[in-house]
Length: 310
Image (tube, rainbow, N blue to C red; front, side):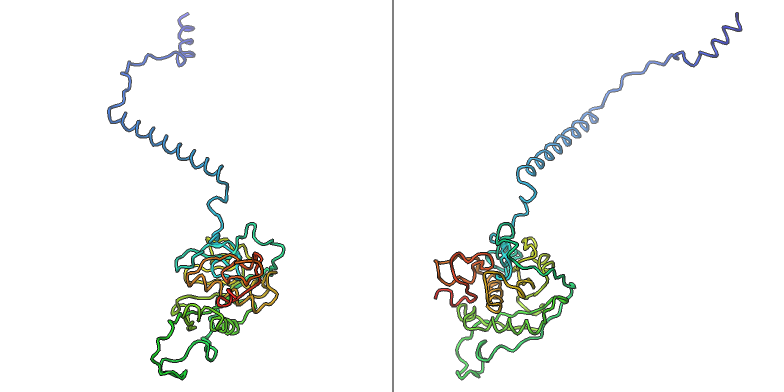
């Protein structure tokens, strides 16, 4: 009997609860209670912020914060250095970092009507050599070579550089020559704003730079304006011209040379401080700051600021 009792004790002894010494109940100190309260408050605030963010995201939609940079900020390119005819990001072309586009990509001109080439540039640049201004267009030297006594106050000169992205099929020097002719034309900004434009050898020396680039490169340059691979823009001192618009224009223009003049004058107009304008009436010449790449609003195409009131 004693052996059996010992065996049972050995077999079941580990299952028998051992008496435990009594311990005092744990209590948080005053500091511990304070820490706990702070942690609970922080968690509550974080939860509240998360809920607010969720509600805003649901109400505003994914594009609420990424509205077109050109309403003033975005517009189709090809016409104003703000964001051309894409969403206009910089309506008042002040030298701020705000992009200016010419039309709004979402719901502007029907995408199917605008030609795309699919061109992707190399991301490197060729800077054009300075072009001599056309004779008699950009003014004479201060010593009176224009036949005057040299005493009259001359227009202020605005310096610019021209660069073309490599791999897009556009010659930098040829583009610079065409741009210089537009800027020196008496129908342009020169006479209207009493200013002359002087091309310099590098962007570092220039007040503003005109860049001809592939659609993907222009899209990147124009951010936060959404140019959608279609338009141009002006952001700060940078005028970004979409190569597709330079080569293919838009359905609103039949003459490619005139459309290019419009692109240059529109975007440079933003740089000079002009925002977008509306058509002044059926059949009238369109203001150069109208987003003509998108809709002429009943006006007739016009690439020149000095002739828009005619």
